[in-house]
Length: 303
Image (cartoon, rainbow, N blue to C red; front, side, top):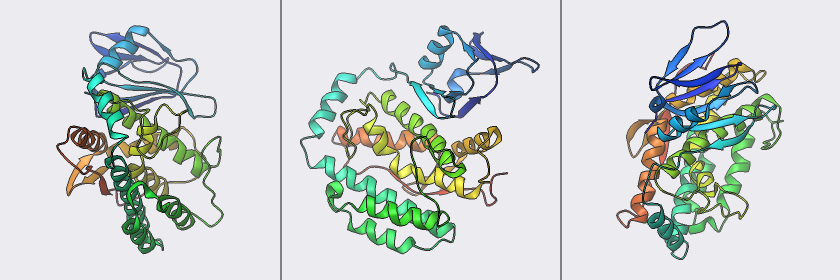
C-alpha cells in the first residue's frame, strides 16, 4: 500500500507508465519518474494534464488516491482504489450492525473528545488563549455528543486561533486562510477515504456524520481528530495569496509526525493505524480507537 508522498502537478503534463514507473513529462523539463506504490495521493491541478487510463489503473492497483481540482483550486473529483480488501461484505454487515449498538455513540464521543483536545493542543502550542476551555469541554462530551460540545468547541476555537475578523467558510472561500484550510482538509480527507476503502469499509456509513447525500460520512468522522494538523500548518506559514508555492508548502503536512497512543507516526501511517483500530472495534477485539493526541511540527514556520 502506498503511504509516502502527496504528488501535486500544476503544469501541463503527460502521465503514463514506463517500466512500472509513473513517467511525468513536462515541456522544457527533464522527465520525472515515481513508483506508483510511493504515492499516497496524486493531485492533478491543471486542466491540460493528459493521463492514460492504464496509468489510472496502475495507480489504483498500487493504492493511490487521485484528486482532480477545478478552476478555483478546489477538489471536484476523487478516484479511490477498491481492490485493497476482499472482505467487503463482512465489513458492510459489521458497519450496519454497529448502527444498532451503543458502541456507535461511544466511538463518536471518542472522536469529538480527540478533536477538542487537539484543538486545545494547537492553541497552547501557538501561545493562544482558550485551551483550558476546550480541555474542559472534552471531559464533558457524552456518548453521541448529545450536549453538542463539538459545536461549542468550534466556535471557541476559531475565535482564538485566527485574527478577530476571521470567519470560517467552507465552500467557495477565496480568502487566503480559508482557501488554505479547505485545500489542506481536502487532501487529508482523500487520504482518510483511501485508507477506509483499502480496509474494506463503506465510507458512506458514518458515526456522527449521517447525511444521506454524503458518500463520505465516515471519512468526515475520522478527519475530525486530524484537522489540527492542517490548522497548525496554516497558522505557522505565510498567509498571503494562496498560490502555487503556498500549495506546495501546505503539502508538507504529510511529513508531520503524529502522536498516537504515545508513539510517533508519519501522517499516512497514523491514519492507517486509526482506521485499523476501527476495524479492531468492528471485530470485537477492542473498544477504543487509536486517535491523535498531538503532533511534532517544525520549530520554524514554512517558507
